[in-house]
Image 1 (tube, rainbow, N blue to C red):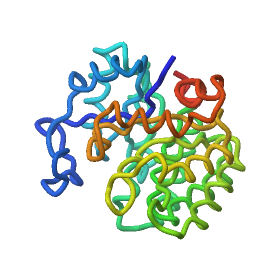
Image 2 (cartoon, rainbow, N blue to C red):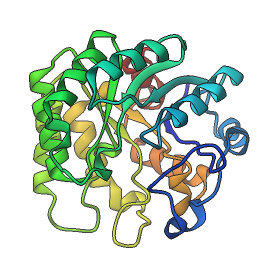
Image 3 (spheres, rainbow, N blue to C red):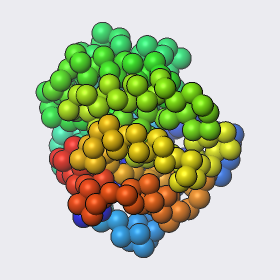
Length: 277
């Protein structure tokens, strides 16, 4: 089974996405599941995990509507108000009514406070996420975000963490050390996983090749092992660098040195385990 563990949808007529403006260029439009579905079939993708794209209940509700209508959707990583543990508890209970609910994410990289993840209320709410057996996807754009993810892994060993976009490696720079060290330390915690996603749009040109990405992918695969690395296409953000077929081709090239069993883990098995699909 091949799983794309990181796919977005957005409907500009139904949901507000504060980060999505005309400055985003060609992705400033509605992207529906009907657009990506034939491309998934063409690339042999059997199931997908939809991931929140706005810190709102409306965005999550929209994804659950799609999940209810399509057997291709195996999971939904939704949003809850982590700043308010009481509200988070109610919202988690509400999402639990949907069999596709697998985890939670917040756009922490859009928060002005780089230490947002360390707030006491957020930590308490994440304890509720752990208690319900759901995952927490971490967007680590700044090293500070990864530092807080590391502290979270140490403080809450029962919470499964997925590091989106393998912590946004510094593609196109010579300053790899801090990122590499933080990813290695995160890999030291067995409940932490790394998502091989969102890479083709990195780098100064906003378009990274497999050769440019290979050192970062190899570090992650060495640190975590294929059983804790999972593929995500990051569509439609990925279309800024190429179509879906190009995105999957880069990912498969990055994993080409692995055995068949290891590739099966990266492109399906790990996602099925971490999200309990």
